[in-house]
Length: 509
Image 1 (cartoon, rainbow, N blue to C red):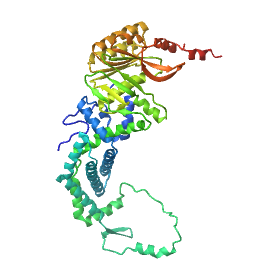
Image 2: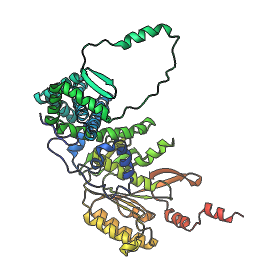
Image 3: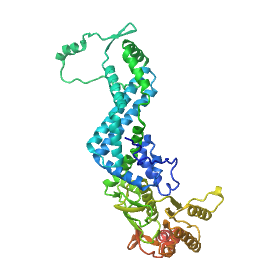
Image 4: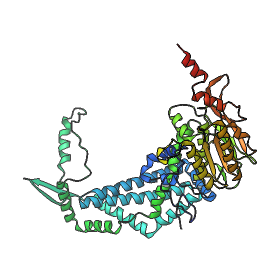
């Protein structure tokens, strides 16, 4: 049976990206992926999270595997397998770093034994749980054939035989006048038992143990190494067999097993990441994706990076909805500062990106676009080295985005053109929006220019809300409704500290 990857079905596969996409920092996806992958740094998982497959077939394949791994018995089987494989790698690493030959060889045999146990146990446990996904069924079938094959059977039998025979070796050690003699054990009487029995009658309850414990060093000292060398001379056939085994089985690890061990951690690490969020009642779902249908929606979505921080601090997470139907393509988000507008935009981008990876997304329901490219245009600090003003840099970056975008692209714009006058911001914003509309792009635009929401029937207005009767308090809810015309005025008032709160503070004696 042929099996290649738990991340890609059939012969499909992709070259993993060598760096994070440029929009990761804008959407706080760098924080999310760092947190997901940090506990499993040994697997180098980031390239998997940097590389959306771009295929509905692959996304469905990953959804099936993820659903299987949400079953406790399968998750436990896979994580137990991973634990044994980790012990195997530790054994191999230890073997490579040790100096004395026989000790190196023993750790190598130990690593092989652990590997064989990992393969056999996973195959047996998958037999019992019967996975439903095509991915894990493929692993199950391949493992069954591999574990029954003559090469693996021979490897496991020989490793265990050598390990058992080594453990059965007994020898006598005579130390006299600075000399050490090693010879075979010849059924000499063990006096320790007799001594303990003789003095047992003098015992008065449990005595305190005053012996000082020493940690056992990984590396043998030179005396132990000489003793072991003498033991090897007493059993030349066994130690010759040990050396031959280590030489012949130097590449015992099967490539498919190694790849599966690493790739399955993509799912395990993500499920580990979202478990605390679910524990506090937040919902995540398997999104529906379409390559051409641009009617998208989300119910009770949230920013994953922010939710992780808030739940860790015991604080509440505010969820939001969005929906585009018919000809609607662009969400214009306005409202007071610090009201959740940028968080909403990040949520929109995060959900699309994670959905395109084949992961669960925040919310109880989601229907999203299978995009070909995702672009962000967030405010940047002015850089003196490029000899461009902030406004010119904004225009240059937007021009590059529009030049590369296709009808299947998603654009997230946040406070673009905020450094110019309202009149210029309206004109430029309208020109940019017309080009986005002409290309039929999905877009979220956070802006104080509320006029953009009335530009076309393709635009939708959403507004961050405040607590009724208390303009200084934010609800962090972003609702679909017409803009109230106050966003630009509030932005100017806050910039020049002319809000009620600022004036009140300045007028205090």
